[in-house]
Image (cartoon, rainbow, N blue to C red; front, side, top):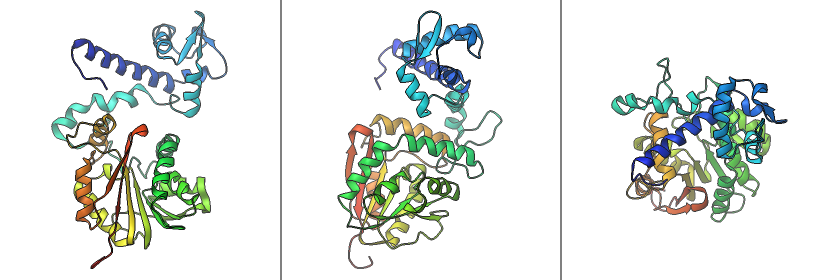
Length: 331
């Protein structure tokens, strides 16, 4: 993201927020869906004509709609994003509501609260008491994970023995575990029951499954490797230290620990993805945050692992930290 140099840069940020609100409103109101089959006039769309006349041109400017002056139609990009589920739902409240209520979070902590005062904190992005919302969230993660899965499986594959036993901890939708299973490894996915149910729908007997709380319940094992994909950012340092010790205990000597996440550099300001993701962690977790690479390296070593190698997957904005459980006394 460009640095702010003058007032017009703030104006550009404001327009970006307005654009996101418009896209979310059109999606949640079914306006994009109404254009799925054919172009429609303003009068044919299920919304206020004045509002359509004043918001649709912005979507033309953004490349989601096109118009002949009489009717509105989805562009190829708009159609593809609608079919992918990227612009098909939500509301402006969903997109911006919690950011608009950032003031009390900054002043008092405690995470975001909805307009009715209820907590918006989640555990791993899901609430077990809301399976429908968990499905929507997991489907979104699945949809956006193809490239990350391929890169993670490729780099892990270079370091795993043939037919390795792998723990996919907090494996969610199961796509990472499935990619490793396709390479001939035996993968156990451990997650909350609501997530395991969704993964089992997709992959059935391709994976093995364990349900529970990975901070307290039996993880099984021993394993040749453990993968933590987008797990550590949701927890505080003490929780991560305890989890890494648990993983050390269930890995075989020379077992591989792989942590896939977005990590910050030594200054805590880059890369952009990790810096801005910190806001999501502030709003929706009790103690989570984006970690500096050196912080996570230290936690791994304190748990008994070797100093992790760091790979920054530049094209996709994430990192892999890869460490081994050493062979030796007490290991």
